Image (tube, rainbow, N blue to C red):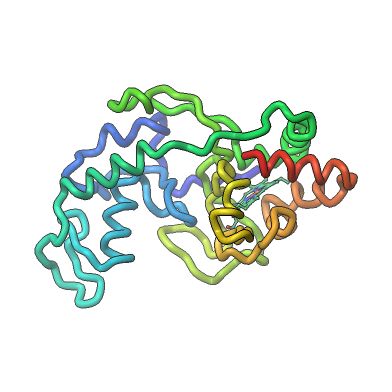
Length: 235
Ligand code: HEC
């Protein structure tokens, strides 16, 4: 399994946020970027300042250049507001798994591991030290490695962001997957462009580094497929 780290900061996997000067976004250091579908932003501060600037056209001292005129303008949002939004995002509650003790769900989890899905959709990660104690050294269950992977030509959208290739995508977390349908009007819209309207359709679109898992899935018996989906819906 090839995992591509576009940029490196060895030894600081979940610790780097504390080391960044919170009044500027330093581009000089080397960071593993984990936010966004192409893994282009290295922390929630960068992600938030970028979103204000590029998605909403609101400049801050972190992103002082107007996206349209390219001219430097006075900040339109304060650093305090940006940091408050970052704090809010950092402390949002993660969805809790449901039906964990159901026999079919448990067997589905074993199938998930056996198919190699867990190589990218990591079931368990642990945070580093944080000055927010609720986030410090905590084990959590996101079902992602937060890394970019070659997903094959079928998912190549000819577009890039940061230094990701056009066919590379960051593994999305699967927590909350089973809740997504009802919060989106009764249908799934999975994968980066929402083209998969069922969990099975999403699995069948996996190519590149994930082709092997996809093939393994197709070789399952009907009942094993159903248990795998039940497990995924419990997340
Ligand atoms: C090589 C890494 C890799 C492996 C192995 C892998 N996935 Fe994925 N998975 C991804 C990436 C990357 C995406 C996002 C692709 C995109 O957005 O186009 C994804 C997307 C998904 C989605 C859609 C999530 C969403 O929110 O849109 C589901 C469901 C999923 N994978 C389940 C599985 C299952 C089940 C397996 C095992 C059969 C598996 N994956 C194996 C990397 C992987």
